[in-house]
Image 1 (cartoon, rainbow, N blue to C red):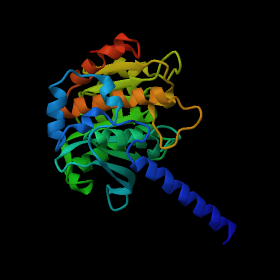
Image 2: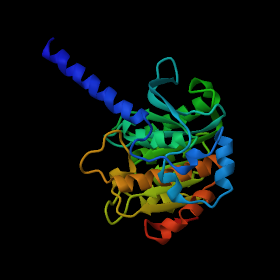
Image 3: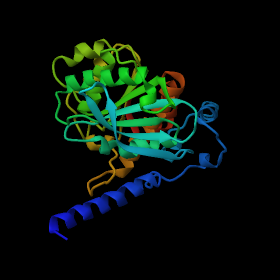
Length: 311
């Protein structure tokens, strides 16, 4: 065997092993007692959760549903434009919300794999997109709006179980700004969850003022990471915006990649994914963030979440 072929084979084996670890079901996140409940579908889960006191710690754990993964799916926006994505489908047969993730600078769709997997165990389908990872981010926001419009009109191209009326945008860093721009451009989504978003220049406030959908900003600790102009998102979105920061979290902790390096702060990453899951459930189930805000109460009280505000 040639050495190049041997290296390629080793890479493929390592990738397969890593992916099997992911498919096994968010191995880093333990299962929750809710898995013992006999919940047939997302509607039954929704009734259960809305009937109990919201609690952020519940969403730290894996949800009750199995997940199917389809890697490198192509979204055919046109005859010449195709978008690469990974799809994470929650197992039940009924329709469910879809969260669309967009990565940030120098990142990729794989950096949100665990977040997408975790959300899917809680009955929310997820799509992680791969766009050029160096911008221009305003153009990415407009491309994201086109992607959402395409899925809204043809949800079966993703999966027949996608509820086209409950699409949620999520983005990290500059990808968060792109998600906000997509909302401003009229993307037919119910709202957005911005993971420590970063500003993208003088045009951003004009876009933010045009947003008329609920938005949650989940930020890193400003004492640890000062993300470029993150304050603009809360300041310029006129209403329906919520912001909290995760104490001790760095900018990169707003991701949850397949493989964590030695510098990863897993505790903060789990808090991010917990808040993200609560927010996505809240928005998908009710069209608002009130449920998620209530679930944050204890974490705000004990200092895990800081700088909480809403308008």
